[in-house]
Image 1 (cartoon, rainbow over the protein chains, first blue to last red):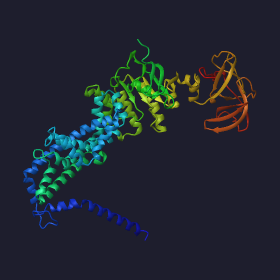
Image 2 (image 1 turned 180 degrees about the horizontal axis):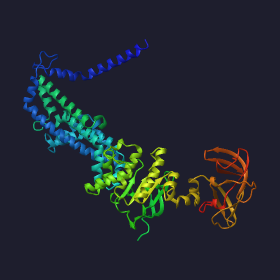
Image 3 (image 1 turned 180 degrees about the vertical axis):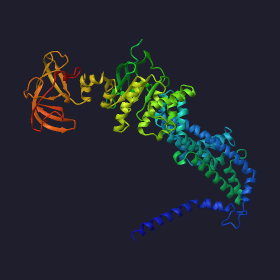
Image 4 (image 1 turned 90 degrees about the horizontal axis):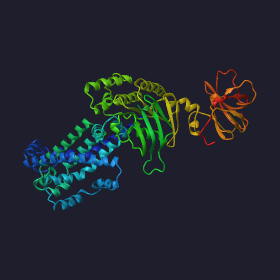
Amino acid sequence: MNQSTPFLGRFAWRTLLVLLYLFLLAPIIIVFIISFDTRQYLAFPPESYSFGSYAKVFANPTFISAFGRSLIIGLVVGLGAVAAGMLLSLSLARHEFRGKGSVNFLILAPFLVPHIVLAVGIMLVMAPIGLLDTYAGIIIAHLGITIPYTVRTIMMSLMSVDRRVEEAALVHGASPAMVFWRITLPLVSPGLIAGGVIAFLISFDEATISLFIVSVRTSTLPTEIFHYLEYSTDPQIAALSVILILISVGVVIAVERLIGLRRAL
Amino acid sequence: MVDHHVEIEQLVKTYPGAQKPSVDRVSFSLPRGEMLALLGPSGCGKTTILRMIAGLIAPTSGAIRIDGRDVSAIPVHKRNMGMVFQSYALFPHMTVARNVSFGLEMRKVGKTEIEERVKKALDLVKLTGLGERKVSQLSGGQQQRAAIARSLVIEPELLLLDEPLSNLDAKLRDEMRDEIREIQARTGVTAIFVTHDQDEALSMADRLAVMSNGRLEQIGTPREIFDRPQTDFVATFIGAGNFFSGKVREPGVAEVEGLGELRFSGEAPTGSSVKLMVRPHRLVLDGTGAAGVNRFSGTVEHIVYRGQTLTLTVRCGTQRLQADLPTHAGVLPEKGGEITLAVAPEDVTFIEKAAA
C-alpha cells in the first residue's frame, strides 16, 4: 500500500502531462494529418492519403515567390533587429543618459499594444510617405515589433558579461573598438543568435500588420495564405502549414545544436 | 636619469556627487623592481589608486609619472600596464594560450614570437602544457597563474595586482604568496598590489603604503610599519598593541597614569602629551619580581593558549596589559597569579602623529 500510493500518484501525474501536451499539440497533429488528404476541402478525418497537396504547393508560383519574399524580409529583419538591438542594449546597459526610462518604455511599448492597433497606426503613417507595399515599409514595420525581443535577449547576455573582463582586455592593449570586437561581441553571441532567430521567426509568420501594409508587390507568405483562405479551403493550406512548422522546428533545432537555445535565452 | 620608476604626486579622485574625495592628495614613489603593497580597510581608496594608475579611471587632479613622464593623458590601452584582477577576469571564450597571447596580438607581435613568449610565460607561472585548456577547466590557483602570465607576457611597465589572493583558499594562498613574490623577483617587474590583509602585505611587499579614508597614513618597510607606526590608525590597524597615554617628564621618559614611568624610544618635547605603544610579544616575563621603570607587576586575569604562544591579560594598577609569551619560556604563569612583565625602551614606540 505504501509502495503503490506514490506509484499511482506518479502515474496520474504523467497521464495528466501527456494529456496536456496532446491538447496543446492537437491542432498541429490534425493539420499534419489533413495535409495528406486527397479531397479538395478541409475535413477530418481524411478519406485517403497522398503527397498531392505538397506537390501542388511546390507548383504554386504565388506561394513560391511569396515564400522567397518572406525569407528575404525575415533575414533582413533578423539582421537589422540584432544590429539595432545590440546598439540599444549597449546604451541601455552601459550608459546613463537623460530619458533612459522613456527609451526603455518605448522599447517595451510594442509588447503592450495589440498588433491590430499597431497595424492601423503604421498604415496611416506609411500611406502619405509612400511606404505602403514596399520592402522598406514591411521591414520597418517588422523591425518595430521584433527589436523589443532582440533588445531583451541581448540585454540578458550583456548583463552576464563581467565588466572586469572587458577592462582586462583594455588594460592589456585592446582599443575600445577591439574590446567590442574581440571580447564583448563573442560573449554576447548567444543573445545575438537567439534574438536574430526569434526576430526572423516573428517576421516570417507575421500576418496582422503585413495585411495592412502589403498588397501585390511585397506580399508575404502569411498574407498569401490569408488571401488564399478567403476563396478556397483545400489541403494545400494544411500542407503549406506543415512546411512552415517544419522550417520553424528546423531553425530552432539548428540553433539548439549550434549554441544551445536554452543557454541563449 | 630619474631615480624613481613610478611617481604618484598629489593624486586626488572625487567621484561626481561625492561629498569627499575617495583618494585625497596621495603621493608616493617606487624605485624600479620594487613591490609595493597598498594596504587598508575596504573603501579606503586603494583600489581607486590602482585603477587610476592603470588608466581605467581618470584622476580628478594630480600626476602619475613613469620614468618622469606624466601618463595621465595616455589612454588605458596604450599605457602598457599589466593588471591581475581580483576575479582574474580571464577571457572565458578563449583558451589559456589565447588569453596569454591577447596582449601580444593587440601589439601586432609576429606569430612565431608570440608562440615563443606565450610558452615562456606559461613556463614562468608553471602552467606548462596547459595552453590549450579552456579557462573553465582551470582551478582557481591555475586561473590566477594564467592571469599573471597574461599580464607579464607583454613585459609591462608596471604590474598591478588587485587583491590577488583573496579568492584562494588558505593553503593555496600561502603557496601563491611565495610564488608571486618569486615571479616578481625573477622578472624584476615593478609591482603594486592592493590588499586588506596585513599578513599578505607584510610578507610580500618591499614596502607598504597604509591608507585610511583616502589618505596615505604611512609608507615604509614592513619593519618600519610594524615597529614604528606613526599614526594611531597604522598602530591599531597593523598587529595588536597596548596603548598608553602619558606625559613626558624628561627626554625619553613618560609618566603613564596608573602604570608608572615608561622609558620609550623617539623624541618628544618635555611636558607634552604622548601616545605610546607596546606590542604584546615585546613584553617578557621578568624574574626579578620588582616593579620599576618599564617593569610592571600585576595579576593574570585571563589566559589563552595558542600553541606557540600564550596570550595573557594582566591587570597592572589601573591598566590592562596584553602579553604574548612563548610557551617554551619555562614555568608558565597561571590565572590569578602575580607576575612581573618587562619591556625594553626601544620596544616602547612613541606614535608621532597621534592625537594624544
